[in-house]
Amino acid sequence: MAEHAPLEPEELRVLIADMWRMHMDERLWFDRIYEYTKGLRGRPEVPEGAEDEVKELAKLSVMNVLSGVRDTFARNLSVVGYRRATAQENDPAWAQWQRNRMDARQKEVVKPAVSYGASYVKVLDRGRGPVFHPRSPRALLATYQDPSLDEWPQYTLETWIDKSNARPRRRGCLLDDGWEYPFELGEVPAFERDPHQSRPISVVEFGDPIEHHATYGGEPVCPVVRFVNDRDADDQVVGEVGPLILDQQAINSVNFDRMIVSRFGAFPQKVISGWSGTKAEILAASAKRVWSFEDPDVRAQSLPAASLDGYTALLDAMKAAVYEKAGLSPAKSGKLINLAAESLALAEKDETEKLEDKKESFGESYEQMLRLGAEMDGDAATAFDSGAEVVWRDTSARSFAATVDGIAKLAGAGVPIEPLLPLVPGMTQQQIRGIGEAMQAQRADKLREELRSSRQLRSVRTPAVAVPDALAG
Image 1 (cartoon, helix red, strand yellow):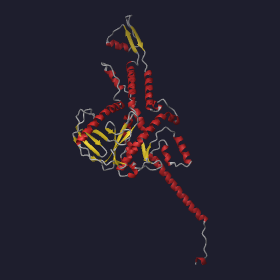
Image 2 (cartoon, one colour):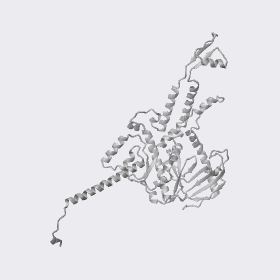
Image 3 (tube, rainbow, N blue to C red):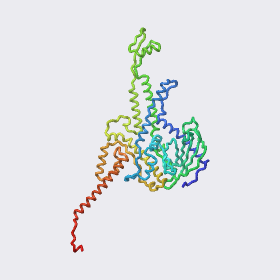
Image 4 (cartoon, rainbow, N blue to C red):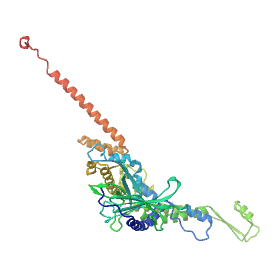
């Protein structure tokens, strides 16, 4: 049960208004990151009065590398299980993950966290078990008394546009450690497409407060889990995209110069001095290989085409610098080819270490989310099973042969082979489970065969003894 009564409408109005202003301040930065990641911003500026063709080239010159940085990390952060290190089966809380289709939806958590520095999962039970709601920081604001230490927020504010019944309406929800407060912000005008505007918020109507019954360790909590990409002593959260925005602008500018040269200078230029012909005459002269003029003062010459090699080499170097700054493998730039798996793994050392840091941070949040869901579902034993942890899909660059050889040597030394199967590159959870079940069945068959052989051997070594009739009587 909640430890406090629901807030009064006037308290809610003040709290929502204050949190909305905080949210709009954050949204300015998050919207900038979003638009750069999508390639919607960063277009080079052109002088006033420039021709339409030049303006069109400026639009086309956006060479987006930021989405590639985000996706490289997101592709390598996939959870495939939740269990103890020595367990063969997943923890009972894993059923919530499957029920919420998080195998496919976990990218909704990871991509915003990598892009902006943080993302959230709201966990609510509507009577059918805990439901996980991934949320971007562009849609949800969470406030903490101590952001660096607190596991749970004090309040969260979420707003969205409800388009049901073809009548767009702006709605919202505020959460604290006991209650969910739905509210209505009115219909959205046809011209207003952005679900978040900088104008002051105005609550039209409050819904009835809903007690969410979320507890963790028996204590009421605000049921929102934060996923942090990276931490800094000055900035509480640090994303991967923000520090690269200036680099993206520079790349777009160089690419714009390259496109200008390719459009207007990448073919031989014909110059005629001392002659002014009509448009038809100029067009005819431009198509000729040999020119002749009666006026001896007329001079004709051909200028060589401009080279794009310098621009292309500069762009390659700038993109490589962005990948290095982001901590990605040099292979991302396409410079490393025909390398052995061990050499490639060494080249990816920085990226691998950065991924491990993210797995530690995101893993703690996933475990917090699953334990919260388990406790809300009435499974206290699972909720307090601190030994269970998430299992990540292995995406490191290792050769199949070398890995299998190492596993075979460990198995030969007496190490159980089943816990080592996830180390095999490309091995899926279904394959691991199938192999484990097959090995268990094989061991059971072998044990039965040994028992059968043992019984037969004892019967051979112990012949039957005849008993005299007198003694039998």
